[in-house]
Each structure stands twice: as structure tokens, then as C-alpha cells.
Image (cartoon, rainbow, N blue to C red; front, top):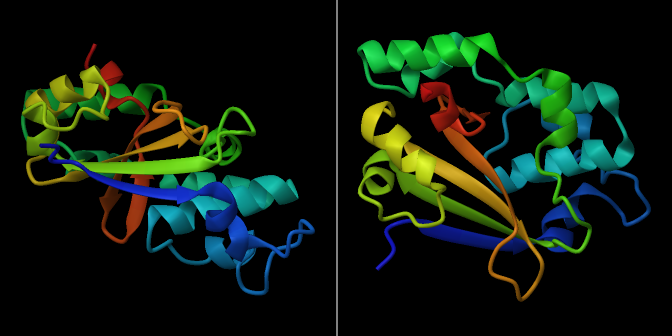
Length: 190
């Protein structure tokens, strides 16, 4: 039995609120509106990113990218106290992703026919116990040694309809009222 939860939505449906099909954002749903507050769900976040990317709105993409990048305080909130947590925070600070890169690269399906989006969630304890098979193996090590107990993590995967695997974005978590993207956090442990 899987302990992680799966949410699936199809990209055109998920993006329907972003535009009228002609490349223009729907009133109140465009990048500028989305960037002014934190999205309530990963679906909302994906819609905001896609709208900005489709509109080639560099300012909105960079603003959205900045909104998901962790601050040092965010990183400290997602790890256990102690040496392993401190080392993780220090390592993540040495090679941060830029807001521009995050805005341009997050939520891009990789191939245009990857129209199904899957969102998997699991707690630190579920990942550490190996009860979240959708999460990469390195995430188990991170959960066992560094991640704060009780925290929920998400993996987003873009998949071609009918296929079982696609392109994954690992890992998101919420800090306060916003989603934060921590790319492959286990790499910072090495």
C-alpha cells in the first residue's frame, strides 16, 4: 500500500484558466496577478508558471522563480537541528539556482506531448520508510538524515498519456504560505 498521495491533472485542463486559447491570459489569471500573491496549490503555481512562460514574460517568470527559491531561513525550517542540517543549509547556499533559471525551467514538461501532470506527496517519515516509491532514491537518504520530521514533500512529474514515467521535478515543500523548490536536496549532502 502506498503512503504517498497522487494528484493528476491534464495540462490543457490545468492551464485552461490561464488563457483564452489565443495566448492571452484570462482576466485576473495572468502572470502579474499570480505573482502578486502566493499560489494556494501546486496546480495554481504550475498555471502561473505556464502562463508566464507561454507569454514569454521575462519579468513574471523571474518573479515567479524568485517566489519558489528558498531563503536560508526556509532551508533551516525544512531540516533537523544539528550538524547535518547546518551542513545542508551551507551547501545549498553555495550553489543557489537563480530566479531567472527557476522562472524559465520549472514546470516545463520537457516534451510537448507530456500533457499529464502528476503530483506526489509524502511526509519525511513516509519517504524515510521507503513508502513513497515515486520519490527518487536519494530523497530517502535526505529524509533519514536531514529533513525535518512531519514535513510534507512533493514531486511533480510530466508524463505522456498512457505512460508510467516522465520528467520529474524533485522536490517542493511549503514554508509558511508558499511553495519552495529545493532541487534534488540529497545532492547537497555529498
